[in-house]
Length: 244
Image (tube, rainbow, N blue to C red; front, side, top):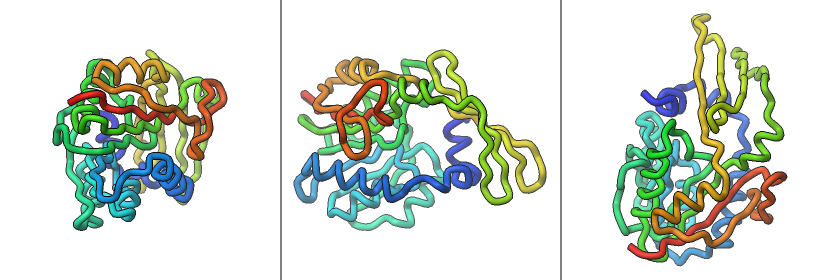
């Protein structure tokens, strides 16, 4: 099992990250929809949707939303929210889904770059493009490599209720590696790892151009302010599909 299947399906993942800013996430989607101005009733794909928080918000605006994720546990949770505008499926982003169908596709909150080999990232990029109709729009919300590197905290202890998470971070083989160690309820030492590729804007442009996508716009934060390679906290990229 890959690290992301093992870790994202774990209850400890939700415990560690329970303090994430949900309001910020909601405001980001609202800003994004205002910028994109999608037509009513259009089809949207949320790639690596997790438990569906973004997909649910998109569906609340009346769009036809499909969420996909490799984690069976996450999709099992998300399916409780299904309705006539919202559905979820277990699916590996590297594989084609429904082709030439969606008007918009989203990949939120650094839900890319998880693979050890570039071939897998290229497969995912092609699958992203393949899901879209001609002139379809892809939005990728990713970490900003240079900002993360400049502010990397090598060691950190995080308290969450009865749990003490010891977190270490490093750059290795052009991936940001995070090791997470703690004791579970039985006092057993547990260890999970996160590994995210340190992709730059030019890396994404190369991958997605090869998949038939053209860059349209780039933003540096969830308020959609201009992107600055060193200072911006996020790398938010919008691409358009050139042809089917």
